[in-house]
Image (cartoon, rainbow, N blue to C red):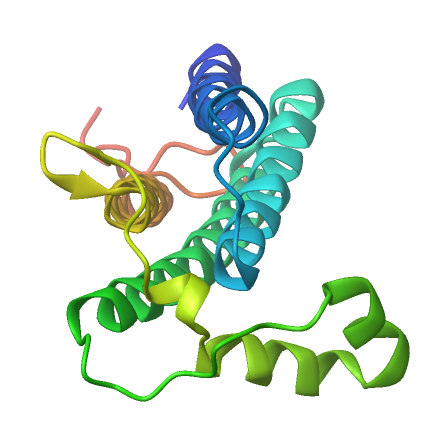
Length: 183
């Protein structure tokens, strides 16, 4: 794996994620859609993924560093996938009883521990179950789920590729082929 290959792939993931984050801000500020708590959690996971990919593209890591960066990116993508999946489930089950209003997140973070805030966000509210915008008959959480699953596939593929390369070539730089003794 060459340095340019790892740097460019991390940078392409960063650019793609930045475009997705830009679209979410466009939908919030230009279109006027108000994000719910689960949407904000998805943005946070996306921002973490962007930070990991930007650091990796600037750093230009070797095999071990690339493995660590892809693993971190995979964890961020997994967290985003779980969050988006929960919101898709809330949107697909309209008979589920959800709380009518969600408290302000700033007040919630000030008064309760962050684990309780995240748990309360995952319980959902009426805002999370409402479908306010679609593109090609997919809601925003469904698009987010597709993006995070795609990033998980890229991360898993790259990690498996790095493991395969490591099994093929030793880390010391020596040849993995035995020298012929008859020469």
